[in-house]
Length: 597
Ligand code: GTP
Image 1 (cartoon, protein in one colour):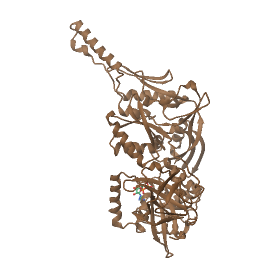
Image 2 (cartoon, rainbow, N blue to C red; image 1 turned 180 degrees about the vertical axis):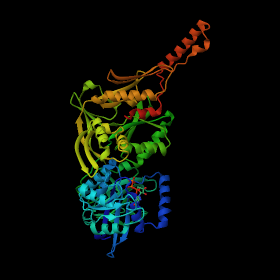
Image 3 (cartoon, protein in one colour; image 1 turned 120 degrees about the vertical axis):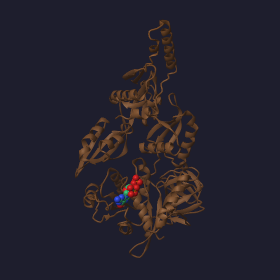
Image 4 (tube, rainbow, N blue to C red; image 1 turned 90 degrees about the vertical axis):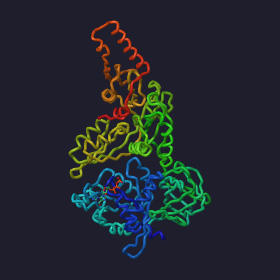
């Protein structure tokens, strides 16, 4: 296609505002699928995909649209992952486009997630087209939401399309605006090849499939290509696009979005944001903006049943085939046996992986306290990074510990503001800004990431009855008075429950943990002390009373020597238990104890 007839765009929306439904509609309207295929084919495909274990990640469909001007256009619709944890992937998807549809639920209005993505989109110089979705709902207030878009985001929303993705209203208007308002891509077909690696996923039949945006030059089958950041070379064996069915093409030229395969076996061999060029006469310089993905949150995953360890290893390896952004290495815990220390992009990412392991691979898991990565400056001036509290060196050797901070934007109806401010304050937050739009407040806080990884999001949702939205990005490391808190059950530290905490918060967190564990650990035949300690100093303590089996009761005050014998026997039983440190801690206790309530 002639470049002037190409339009590349993505859809920006808050979760549940209708992004996927609108994408399906656009595909259907432009004839990518017939009504019958919509219900049959796509579903069938999905089943196969599920069977093959493919995640349907950010993907792109190519739509053919004949506009009112009589010309036929090639529209590349780029899907973007919808969560803060995947901010970098989102930024690359946006960098591959010239415009975006901003879908806002006309009954809900602008939300924090919408804002974060819009600002990114603006940074990429996108032409942004507002769409007021769900106007079929009786609760829709398109005029209020139109004002919100103008006031909060500062976009002209006077031409915003009133749409219902569900009922198919406004679909043609959206397509017309895409053609009219979004600029055609630039680029030079005759320059050396420069293509951006936007995303990749594993397909059992095709191998790794790579989604690319060609900036300059031409990508063709049979070409030898080079990944500039990775420094590796491959042979292109397929070039094509998805409509959404896979269609092979002779080439992808400057301005186009499509996919290639190059006999690559693992997703980890491809880096999102990398520049692809030709081995022969390649580009001298890579595209800007490449970043290596780094895990932000770490936790241990252990099988409840030690016999499941091999199964866990296999399952984790399989997941990793398709998701190079999480990392794992073996870990041995005194309390939990063998498992894995895993790194994730964020909490949601952690939950997704944990859920998939539980659901798809049918594993019962214990997840240890999530931890962020701390930077320690040692007394000898060297630096160390710590992502497992269990590995914390002796405090006397540490000169300084730094922890990651984030800037969080929370958006909520006014009535919940008090509770939310208190929550942020309790989590060592520093308020940066508070503004109002109508009856909604927008609060900006700086918070230590460590205070957010536990249950901040759950708390926020419960305080606001689900109305608050939350978005964050990292703003760097700051030193803090951080200490390692151990939890001792029956005198033995339970490594899975160790955590790094701020000294000021240690006592209340410790007390809370002990109280929780007291309720969560069943009574045993002996007394069980539950303690929180920093170094050798106990800062909180609870005791689980012994379950008293009154064995002498049957003896009716009979023969005293018999009574004594029985008591001795019982004591021995106790001693045995103690000897093996035989306290059974139920699985739920690990996660439940970490929630701060
Ligand atoms: P995520 O995939 O979670 O990010 O959500 P999304 O933004 O893709 O939203 P999705 O398309 O899954 O829609 C969320 C819900 O809103 C679904 O139950 C849809 O059926 C519904 N929905 C989408 N568009 C409309 C609409 O125009 N009108 C009404 N009434 N419901 C809609």
